[in-house]
Amino acid sequence: MGARPQFIKAAALSRAIAATHAGPQAIQEKILHTGQHFDAAMSDQFFVELGIPEPAFHLGIGGGSHGANTGRMLEAIEAVLLAEQPDALLVYGDTDSTLAGALAASKLKIPVLHVEAGLRSFNRHQPEEQNRVLTDHLADLCFAPTNTAVAHLQREGIAKERIVRTGDVMADAARIFGELAEARAAELLGSGILQGLIGAEQPFLLATIHRAENTDDPARLEAILTALGQAPLPVLLPLHPRTRARIAEHGLEPLLGKLTLIEPLGFLAMLLLERRAALVVTDSGGVQKEAFLQGTPCVTVRGETEWVELLKCGWNRLADPADPAAMLTAMEQQLGLDPLQQRPPLYGDGYAAEAIVVRLQQL
Ligand code: UDP
Image (cartoon, rainbow, N blue to C red):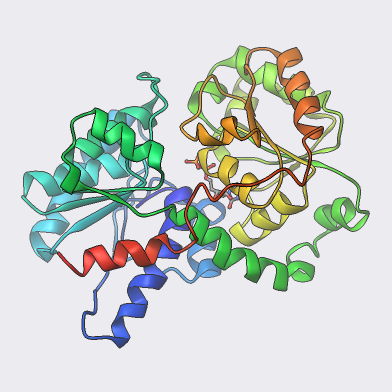
């Protein structure tokens, strides 16, 4: 693993793996951190707050281009695998770390297990789409979170016995850490800015923007910041380091005047804010689902989403990230969503990690 969303998925699964230590079929887990996200706000705080075991290996590879990172990781992961000879390598999601791990292990004939398999945006230029398609085809077992994901894998010819529908470990994370977050709400929201917004019980909009297709295109980033600046509610924007860097590079600081910018949040604070927000606006995969799981409507500023079931049930709506008027219309529409609207159990029962562990014990 190497990136923020992977730490959160690992937090759910590592607990279930640790729970096997009391029984006859204990699984030993060793974590390899590639270093893709390396600073305290994007990495360390998740290990501490979510109780993820310390990585046994830390490659310190990050900050380069996709090709350079993936190549360096491939070589370094291979060395670790050769030394450790694990029974399997488990990878999460769709980052360069995921692909490098899957490729290194599969060349060494070490079984590859892919958590969050079968997602498709059908946008072949997206780095995440390239990583996830290749990883699914290298994987010996594809742990698919939804029926849609299972259908994608089958359509691509992946054999039935390599596909396991498990539910979504992000639903596990929301279940486990949502309770903890509520219990610690006063402490988590105690700091000045958050207390000011939430303590006043003023409706607010929570936004996250970090996808390369939005941040690296100056016109798109400008359009998104313009729309957020005109949003019908005060906007709280925890800033991903890439977005912060691109705003500075593209000279877009003047558009930030009306937004409340904060450092990236820990997961518990993030869950709480998703729950308390009147609306979430995002280009994140994980945040779309979390908003739904917390009962908050969402606008996704992308041309497509992997989580299509949320569009069907109305809890999420896509808006063109190049068009401020379209984004504002979508915000108004989602703010009108009936909060009692049904939330079907799309992502499983919150025990996907246990289902994955059962399968691991059969390896
Ligand atoms: N997240 C967080 N703090 C933040 C922003 C996001 O803990 O300031 C969490 C969020 O709750 C979700 C995960 O990070 O679980 C999503 O990661 P990200 O948006 O970076 O990646 P994606 O899901 O798009 O792959």
